[in-house]
Amino acid sequence: MNHIVTVQDAVTAFADFMEPTDAELDAIEQELPVILAGVDLVDAQIIALDRTPNEVDNRRIRRARNRVLAARRELANRTAGASLPGGAA
Image 1: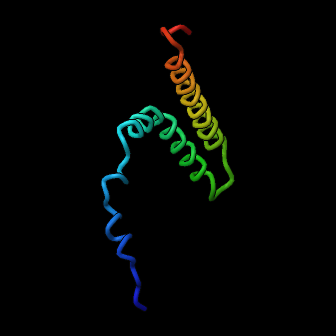
Image 2: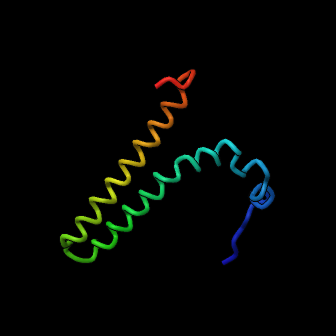
Image 3: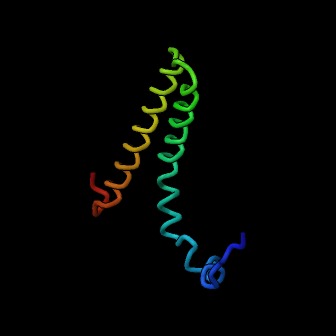
């Protein structure tokens, strides 16, 4: 079976405009704690998938959920504080 690739895909696959902008990279960096906490939560859930969760698994998942909520809260507070003029809270 021969695969047909369009010329446009081959030309634009590595175009400069497809790279993330500095603003997008800054946004990702600000959200990184939330992303990492979410990864930890998924890891804890995956560990408990193949068996009946025991108390340690439940505690691990509960702590991971709390870390996600705390990271989201920190991000929301940071974002809300940054949007207020004069740094007033």
